[in-house]
Amino acid sequence: MGLELNQLVQPDYSAQYLWVTDKTGAYDATSNATGWGDVGDPAANFRLNESALGVVVIARDAARTVFGNVSPQWKFSSSADPDTENQFQISYVMDSVIDVYSIRLMVANHTPETTDPIISLDSITMGVGDYWYNNADSKVYKKVDGVTTPVEVTDMRELVDALSTLEAGGNTVSVLCTDAYVIKLAVEYGKEYKNYVIKRKEGCSDLKTIFFNMLNFKEDIIGARRSYTSGLFSQTQDIIETLTEEKNI
View (cartoon, helix red, strand yellow):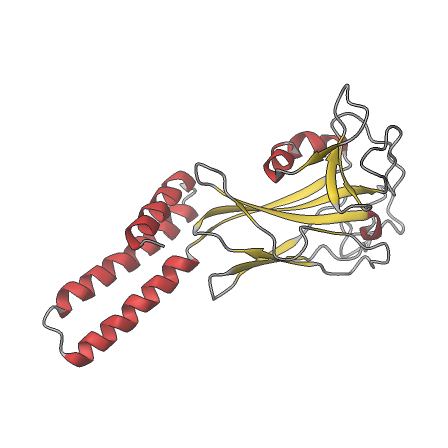
């Protein structure tokens, strides 16, 4: 069996961050045959200490907004144990249907001007179409046909779009978690509820209007979650974007 990444995605209650933790764990023939390491594994699973692990978060809005990493986007340690857990802190930009990609890349050491051959730590010679993490400058590069030196990759959407092709070659592994988050909307609802409680204590004459506006807002948030669980991702995204615009978040 080949390596299968396992990630834990957790939103921050403050609506400022997402936390993504690599939970792949060490290879074990009985309990975790798809983990990091290759001891006793005929498929020779990739080792964590020869891999760069990264997280790319993309919203399903029209611009495909990429959430920025607060911690380094790519982590590599030559001394990493197979059961080491890496955690990534990502800036929470906006509510959306969000795709979270955990990616394993090959690692190489070279100057950006290096020409062929470029060989990874796990003895793979880079070919046209390959992507890898360069430990010398902590950047991602790709091999382009007709270009003698590697080309730096700055837009991670390109890497994500190439994942299906990369995985066919067996040197890049990824796992995708898709979820609909409404953290900022939930925070905004909490503010409105608190305001409603204050107005109720004050005996506000327009209490009914405030209550039903708040109730409708809550039902819309629930509706977004229901449409998401029904697999209606586009409809979910539309609901979230409409609410975000209405609340000016």
